[in-house]
Length: 120
Image 1 (cartoon, rainbow, N blue to C red):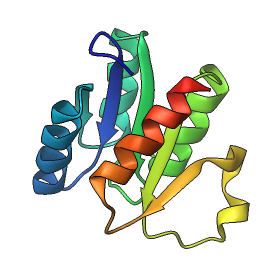
Image 2 (image 1 turned 180 degrees about the vertical axis):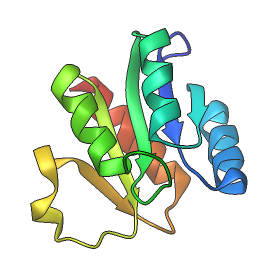
Image 3 (image 1 turned 90 degrees about the horizontal axis):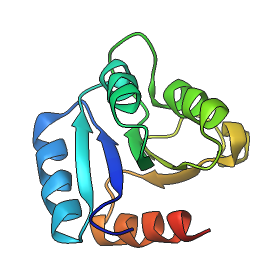
Image 4 (image 1 turned 30 degrees about the horizontal axis):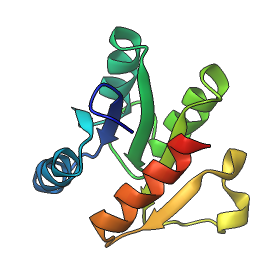
């Protein structure tokens, strides 16, 4: 992913979001940030060139991160989607076989994983 490609980080905890955005930007990503799925959907409408989404699962708002990922996958099957959090269902039961990273996660591994997803 190059600087002219966008990714979205969806995380409701401000300090975590700020930290991960800084690390993603240091790794060369252009990052848009959202505090919940509703904000992420608004960003997608404004920025159709978004290439990847990294979303927390358990968030406040009208839908959670898995439902957000499902919506994104339906409208943009080419978009790389990575989910994180504390998974309450078996990985094999994730819709569309989303990639999952459990918390706490190593941001450098997440960056590598997103790069791998966007190269496919």
